[in-house]
Length: 365
Image (tube, rainbow, N blue to C red; front, side):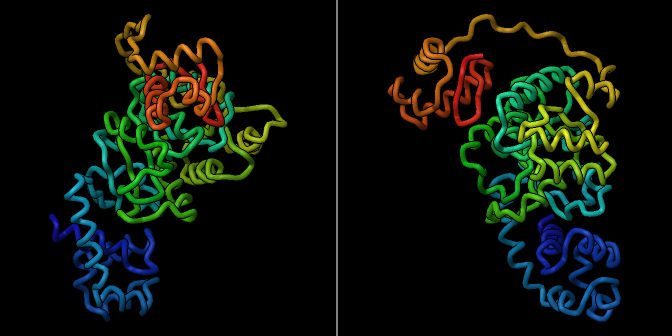
């Protein structure tokens, strides 16, 4: 396993070799290990593979870095997924530029029966968050897996509400599994490990550099049946993801907004140019995707009263008396350390007690 894995990872480390040419090498040579065992003269005959690339393959220096990654994988229980592996996302496999390797830390099948990507701006508004919550609540009986990018704003909202409604959710990251970015989402990422997980094509030690996120977006689009854009400006990662999804022949949905609202312009543009279907509710998505006939789960009795810890009750009392508050105000009034306030608020959000608003502000639901 380890001997084979070192060559699979090694393919991704060859300079100037991307996903398309990496797969081409494997196909021509008959396997990852065969690439590194092939004669130089034979490699030079492969279309699109230049002399400098062949030299990099022959000297095999990339395998040393691959060895380090295998040590990381073993230490932290990461699942390495080569593009020909059974557990590799089949929807992504059929995308020409799908990654050669993926690294997964999670407990759910990435080939889930139904997968919806939910994306949007990092600067989400109250309107966007409320609509995102309503749509995911409406999908709670579909058993759909929710995929997003674990970023601020709509991504975080999608993951949190998926967890709230017991839907599996996977965060696709633009960096290695040795960190969580943004760091404020560490608790959220930890909660996702209970029903979903974290996925990336980047090895440990990879920083969350700007150029990594468009690459991340193609994974979000490629592993889903459909993509929902909740809020977006006319440019940005959500629009890139929607365009990629459209090119992959995925269904694309967009939530409409006011014509003069900055973060609805992207959604309205996708609808206006016929690249996305207008959706107002979960029912619209279910109808278009033919998900409305799924067997319903047994209804779960909602808790009428929530048992709160002493510190949770302090924050709830403050929000009851004052309405909407910022996290700094809550810390000052409750005398609870900021690190604990953040964790408590996240837990209360998961339990449906508070609603997170833009600017790190909160109110009771």
